[in-house]
Image (cartoon, rainbow, N blue to C red):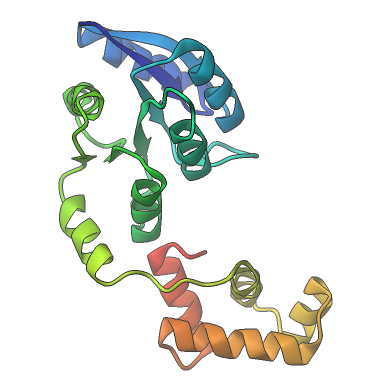
Amino acid sequence: MTLSVLIVDDHPVVRSGLRAVIEAGGAIRVAGEASTGAAAVALAAELHPDVVLCDLRLGDGMDGIATTVALRALERPPAVLILTTFDRDAEILGALEAGAAGYLLKEVDPDAIVTGIRRAAAGETVLSPGLAARVIGGMRNPLPRLTAREVEVLRQLATGATNRQIARELFVAEATVKSHVAHIYTKLGVDGRSRAIRVAQETGLI
């Protein structure tokens, strides 16, 4: 049986390259291409591909994780295989939690992409070499859950902004910012701004 695939990437050259790789693999048909998450969801609802091969970063609008959630919510949900250059734990776990069948890095051999598509269509979990142990470790030791406001404050901290500047930027009281910062330190298990930023960057929280 010929499998159908929808390619989702915001770079035309990448989409063209992936199409060539997939079509050279045999027994897999590229049903369509999309450059945004919204377009991917609309096309998937129309074309009913077996697998959606999706980048994690799609420019403005929905990212790969949000796109995965929307795709998996369709009446006839396709398997979603993330193909990206980003390998931070938060993004890998986030994609899998969103319902992705797998997570491959663009550095893998072309054959691994074709094999990954077939495995995803068969209901298997597909991970690039070396990622499986990290996924298991992340599930055993889940990343801290920050609120949306705490993430905003953390991003401001990363710019070097003071509490007063953050308060002005977010239109809240300086005391509120201090409270958010204290909660962030507690959740990340750190005792200072530089360490909080480092941990957040290493884990993909920001």
